[in-house]
Length: 413
Image 1 (cartoon, rainbow, N blue to C red):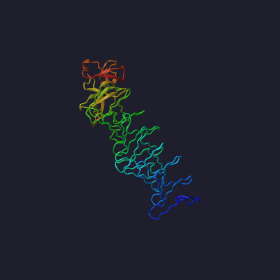
Image 2 (cartoon, helix red, strand yellow):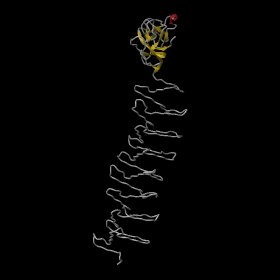
Image 3 (cartoon, rainbow, N blue to C red):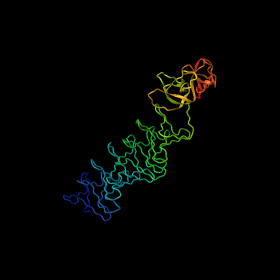
Image 4 (cartoon, one colour):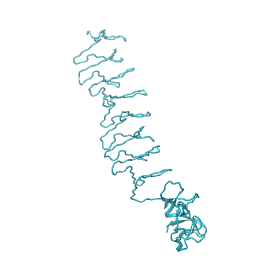
């Protein structure tokens, strides 16, 4: 028998044991070209079992192509497995080499798994200037995160950028987000005091490009002083906000109680301005006295300079008709401002419904109208000598008898 060969049939007795009570080796093996120490086990727990006060198994090599400890499994199990109650299952340490731990697999290079609710399946840390975790792929994903119900598939938290994406592809995105659900966000950004989502582009088409089945970009705010969507241009000729539509509205504004659009500065319009439902151009005037004045009332200039319902026939102080009666509404209101006096829009140009009195003469279409003795009512101008300077306009509908509200064409003269 070889002096170093041992054999045992007992389950608790080793075929070969070595003991050293000092700092030497209990068992040492050396081989020029083969295995220094080799263990074979058919069904046992381990071919080689190491148990130490420090390292259970310690491997060392000076070969630049080989490993200090190498594990291989030609079945379906693991090449190397590490388990620790409170420490690291497997630790890799490298000062200058390519990687502390290198994983190369037919499926996953490195696969991490944990059931801890506070920890990570794979965790990477870098206290220098490099990356905590880096992923590279020739044709697939550099890094993939998947989560069924958790807060995030990928969570980034950084002193500068939480997630930083970069690409040199002319057709793709530095950061791309997608949501195939029924109501979630492709990309969502939140900031306590800064920008929730920010896009910068030097020469590209847009800093932020939105394309949606409904809204390309949707902005919302509850701030009383700010905007749902805000655009700014510090250049010399560009637009702060620009809107374009093939067949709809380039820019659309809607409000319940405020202004649908507010412009501080000059407005340049190269096309038509359409005002559906609008019939006249009116101007705000102070109203003299405290009486309630209805729309359609004929108004004259009072001695105080305000307006009051007309009361004299052929009054050359006539100013116009209070706009807004019937189905005609003012399209443009000039000089609309706050005042300590009551103010009303007076139609100066266009069509307006006007109170008329046919007691003095029947009114036919095309008749010139002037003020009447009936307060706030117009009548037919029968005396051309008195009519000059007191004509309100022309009747667009007849009024044979009595008093009524008829449409007229404002034509002060």
